[in-house]
Length: 185
Image 1 (tube, rainbow, N blue to C red):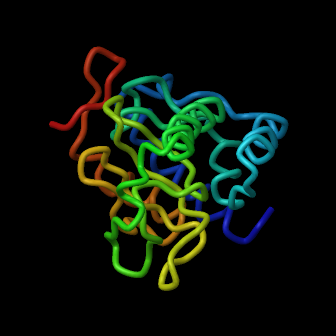
Image 2: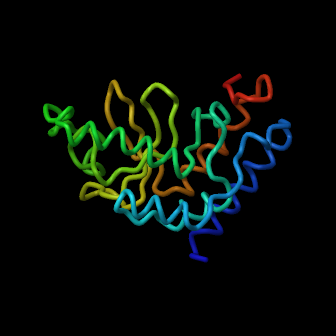
């Protein structure tokens, strides 16, 4: 196990306690297999950081609506969501935005980058994204925010463990409704 994985495990323990207290542990999916994780790397042509792999080995995402940000993506969800963005990039949909800049030097210019991997989704085209190809002042593995209307911004966390810590820190602002949806109070 990589030295970064224990940080993810500790945050997951905190998140799992909150879900259990809400009677909502069923909203977090069972672990991904090593084969599923390897498929993400191979299909997207990336090497997911060990923190992300450790998280997927704990929970392969959440049910739809079962995450404060809508849906924590499973391996299949990561592939699907990232493919949509990459197809838009490849078909020229973002050509007019190739010089778009936000996030200072931490992010490369552009509306989407082939080195980005979707982590969560709100169902409306927005979500947190793993940046594996940062700008000169960024860090590989930083997490950024992608809003389909205003573009990318951030970073919102220096790494995946930081992303999970941010989610855990805000859980008290949420509740579970109808046993299926995590919603802001």
